[in-house]
Length: 363
Image 1 (cartoon, rainbow, N blue to C red):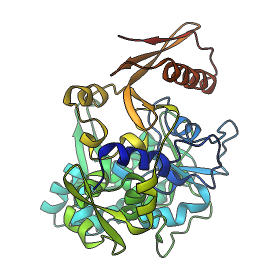
Image 2 (image 1 turned 45 degrees about the horizontal axis):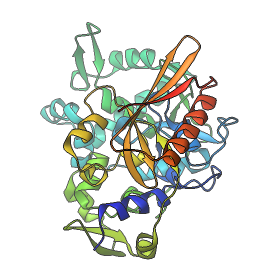
Image 3 (image 1 turned 180 degrees about the vertical axis):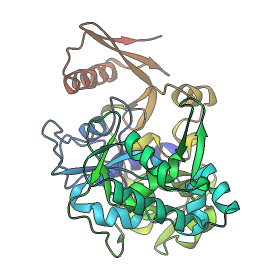
């Protein structure tokens, strides 16, 4: 039996949020992917784990649309096994991952996996050189039949459904060029999907290793997969752990790490940092009002992590030459904690290549 505080400390250690420096090669979260959403996306998440991102290059990393259709960063050397790990568990799983696109496909008698393969083949043929997403979408609309398409009111045009588009890109061996907006797709040089993902990249095991202890529903919610499919792939080498009265699973190899986990130091986590992507949100933030503050429908703030606990939110504010970090603590912070948070704000400013004006600690 463990409490939520011990779980959070285990995750801090598993995700290397307590280390001073590291390399891409030894950064654990790159096995599951580092979401690259917003100005404080994948690079800041890696920096928070001690990686020097100033010289990050295309030769080292690859950006792909993967879990939940979001852009995630991976080591380029791992791309074949990453793509193998992303293969839907079943046709029903593929249907769940593509959301509303599954309904017209079903009505037309088209299997979800077959549809992804069809879109991927068409995308591969179109993207022979770096191509802007809108151009790829427009050309797909000209060659794919009606069940693959929907009318988009904001654009007043007909497009292919978004999730099949995104999830088919990796099947087609396509990556996203870094720092392009709108996104530019290109072929992955020398792309070859691995025969299997292996334990390190298996998404169920990776979730348990980095966000455990967990239940099959937690993992299914993270992947947008059916619980049934996740249960069928649940590892045998797990132990049962009771967290605040709920039975969960942990990889047996991590039992000692859970028992002994401790955490020191502060981090300003970006809004989509993996630490905040865990699907047991009440474990991270038991208070309902604070959870709504951290995970609003629109405009997420970042989270302040101090000694293994989430203790508030933060937002960057830039106006002209001034850059401030507004911190909203959920509890009184000690002088030591404030100094550590301020030091992280200085790191963030340097990361953004601006000078920090001040840190505002709200009441």
